[in-house]
Amino acid sequence: MEEIVRDTIIGEQEEYVINMGPQHPSTHGVLRLVVSLKGEIVKNVQPHVGYIHRGIEKMCETITYPQIIHLTDRMDYFSANINNEAVALCVEKALEVEIPDRIKVIRTIVSELTRIQSHQLFWASFGMDLGGLTCFFYGLRDREKILDIFEETTGGRMINSYNCPGGLMYDIHPNFQKRTREFIKYFRKVLPEYDSILTGNVIFRERTAGIGHLSLQDAISFGITGPTGRASGFSCDIRKHEPYSAYDRVKFNEVLYNEGDTYHRYLARVEEMRESMNIIDQLIDNIPEGPFAVKMKPVIKLPEGEYFQRVETARGELDVFIISDGNKNPYRIKFRSPNFVNLGVLNHVSRDFKIADLVAISGSLDLVIPDIDR
Amino acid sequence: MDKKQLGDFVKSLEPNAEVKEGKQYAEITIPPSGLHSLAKKLRESEEALFDYLISITGVDYGKELGATYHLNSTIHGHIIVIKVKTPDRENPVLDSVTDIWASAEFLEREVYDLLGIRFNNHPDLRRLFLDSSWGYPLRKDYVDDINIVTK
Image 1: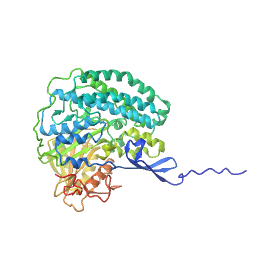
Image 2: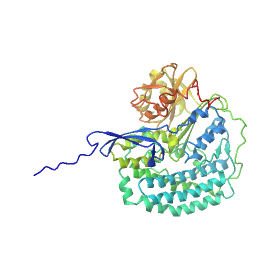
Image 3: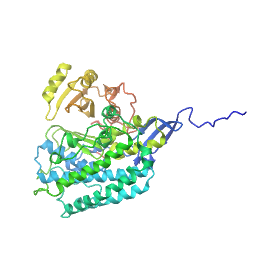
């Protein structure tokens, strides 16, 4: 009898290297992953970044603090308001300015709306990465409603530049409260649909559950924050640990899971949308009266020293570290952006999984490339 | 521990560390030779337990180049700032802390890329954002040929 000769699969004997990106639909931007494969199994992932490096930190050294606000929008453009808030809070902390309640409450509401729209976009694009195009339309349909609210109040849809040192650029639009309430009511009704499309879907769960496991110990060592870290049980929510703005007066739960796989990273974000709605509910009906901005000096000069401010963006911990020499522009400003640090774990979590899983894993880290490159 | 206790604690670990109580956190200045051993002690001692490296910021101080480390303990919740400065601008070298915190691999590559500080024992020290033909843009003596950024 003739011996059956098994077909050899190219690359099964030795590792070979392919480029994923810089233009690849699942990287959501210009990120190049150099992937070493053995057969279909991922052995090593080397991210190559810098395609849209603009040198924001260098530019900031030559411009004034109110101008820096406009550059921070362009880092993580899905958390634009929260990035603005980080710089505004850091400058206010340095100048020891007392901020009225009205500003704090509005900032918190706007930040939580930002978080919801960011997670909606994550949900939309993550579903699309895994082959469910319906999610993309549903997610963007609902996200438009928040962007409309932003447009009315701030004048911008994604790039808002709404928070500035000393308060807000403008007061809220008269329709703001009404439309936000309407949106929350609408989105509460719609969110179960999200679950029935994706969360309970068998194919989706097969693709994500148990894939790309990240342990708590590794999450802390790699500094993985945001919903990605919290899915591994790393309690890293700055809103809880170092409350800023109005987070000390609202009740909400920190979404924590212990599993740390792709599915729970997804689930953490869906749950966070519910928590964000709870926060907005507690604040939207009683926005205190008062001014929308504190009078600041026309030229803001920070006293000499070092100032560090931590905030929680939709993707994790953003830190602004300003070293001031007493001038109107910073001597050195550093943005510890969450996506940059989170990218560092990609090789660790995707090793020994299939190349198709790499799309799911990198999707679940929810990377925004301009925030990595800065 | 509050910042005073942390300062005293570091002083007991490393007598040649310079301790300053900053506005927000305890600020420790340490010569480059003592960085790695201090970092290891801070990570491993039960009282401090700094298991989370928040960020590494490379800074050009003019005469010196340096790095500032922000450390956080997820168990105790305290934060400490460690500063290292090296006067050698031609060939600045610090010790890598990648064996203590995995996140340092990317953070140190960023510092190397933008300030040209090399890290001993780093597993994969390459330029990150920029091409190897670029200078080190975050240094204060960096000259921008296209002249987009001037002060």
